[in-house]
Length: 292
Image 1 (cartoon, helix red, strand yellow):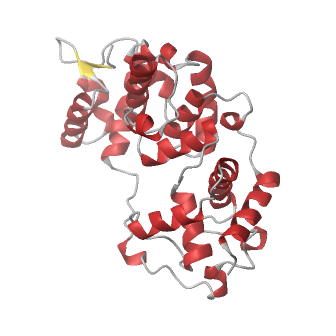
Image 2 (image 1 turned 60 degrees about the vertical axis):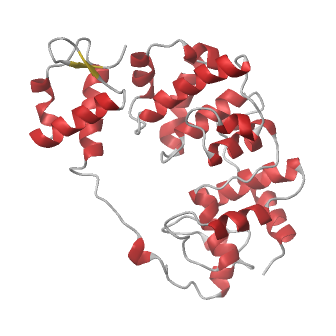
């Protein structure tokens, strides 16, 4: 088993050659651009996020630009990224940054956590990737790297545990620069090499010291607890169809024109949920449209 210093050194050295060229990593990135990227990347692949992020940042390059944008424009710009409530939270976040911080994304963890839609992970990521500060940054990819390389498990537990949090904190280097590099490198390793289904162990900088590999690749001890849900027929699918119809409409849409989105009872439930979530509204005739 490698020491913490050796583990960090190997992964950050690998990252220096393997890091993807992503726009939110460019030298001219802004803290706002990093924050937007982190919200967009939640449960969404990089390939889908990048074009939307570029268009979004061209249109709303600063929090003050997004703060006054009509909700309908924000939801249309979000497009098919999924989980569109994230778009509403970003708009709320932009307004909070303007009102509380004069339009400048704060660097302090407490201030970041107080922003709408910013949780522990996003706050840590903004501190590391936007400001180069030491922070604990743990996403699904980092959890998987830690589970395999350090704990010898095939995959982490279904829910983030206190033990994982303590392990993650123990791996973060003390100085800001190395800590920020470790945050990016460990995440990239999980995304590109230490993947969930087909890890490329032969390309891993930790292959000689990986606890999971040295233990003979034991199976996933949490397999029975993991739930998988097919996309077909879910409320998320129906909601997505409705949102696509509303984004593409030039006028309010009668319910009858949304009937193909799903079975009647499910459609009504999803329509009610979208209205309650602030993603849609109705006019006096009961037709559906994006919020103003």
